[in-house]
Length: 186
Image 1: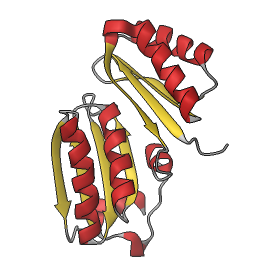
Image 2 (image 1 turned 60 degrees about the vertical axis):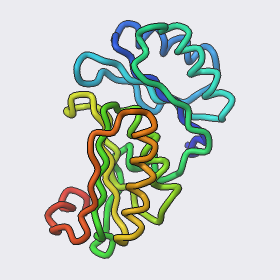
Image 3 (image 1 turned 30 degrees about the vertical axis):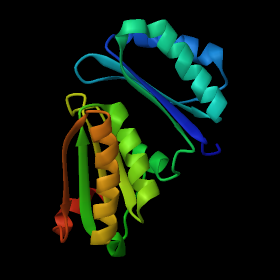
């Protein structure tokens, strides 16, 4: 599978509407399903990937079908390649990868994808975890590591995007984190 050039995300207040919209999304354009699942507090999320025009058409069809049940949505053209392994929780850090730790938390799973993409594009950081909504009360979480200055730059870029969307919960940079904070990723 080639890494998609673009991703589209729709977050719905209704699970049933999410299924209807997802059906329309696949009928409207040739996209690849990356995530489709129920998320905390009874919502539904769909993430698709593909060519920019296909993703835009797919998301537009989902928006049209879902109407007022859409909580949040976005299309990221030319998404940074680091987003996919972090979203799939397949990033393994080596002992030399443990630098400063950046944490960004948002009110929606959709907004954390935009924030993580911005961080990856703005700084030389390793995005090693993007957690969307499950077991977080519908929130999003992004973890990154690198030099202190790079992590600060990456966190700031992510924060700017999350704030612009009105969905920032919290951010922090830990310059010298305890190695135990990385234990699940080594």
